[in-house]
Length: 357
View (cartoon, rainbow, N blue to C red):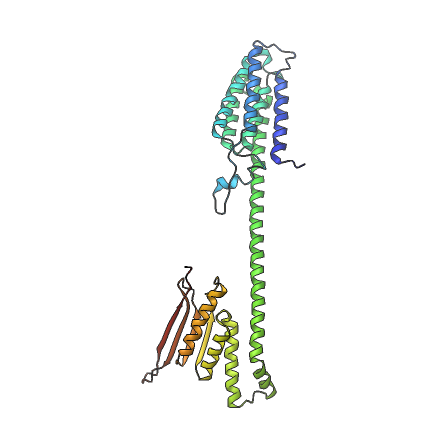
């Protein structure tokens, strides 16, 4: 059987409230001038305490970036005390004034400093502790102030202080510190949990990237491996054809490492054909294709292969775009043949991102 924190706190508070109420009825060694008023005062206290304990409040809600109000309610809700409704706060404050007055007025002057004559000091202190735990600190301290005024009025200052007023104030302060500590612990636990989830997601993403990069390297080495082995065997002494193959292999290796999501067999074939006719090709993907599905990537790669097939530029620059509407940009540059020997842009193609329609 599971026991919630709210159930434990409610049981403890109920037991103390009943004990204090019972103490008010043990009229031993004193004179009670108005017993009916004493009984009504005790009943009023028990009713108000029950209201503060059992009336449902507003469950705490917190969200990232929320203000201090949300932070204060991190431990509130079904498992703990919820915020006390405003009307109950008003009832508690009224009781903090009426109960001391009724209890003291019902007794003879000589009986007001007896144990049953000062029961209300601890009783209202307990009530304000409940109000504090129910997330109403200002109301709780206001109730302590009202209790202090009423007690000093009936008992004067020194007797009031010696009969439990200081103790009730300290218990309310202790309740506030405990609630603040619980909230801080809950907030830290929530942040730690969020950090753990973030770290796990980052680790999973890194492992995925590492696996993808290993696959890319293996594919690239399968392409460039033969010419690399030939270069090692010949100690770098390659003929013109082998040097051309080495440059093509180098380009293919760069493609696999820097723009693998742009590539399929058709794109690889067109890039290889462009390099073999003497063009310089640069392929770069900086994450511009992230989030696209495989059918969308297939469509983009098909348009890219067609564009490279038709290109006659000396240099081709292919880059995955981060623009919300453009997926890939292809720029071709060739020598203008002028005196300035500057390149001119003879190809500019933008492949649009597939629409959701």
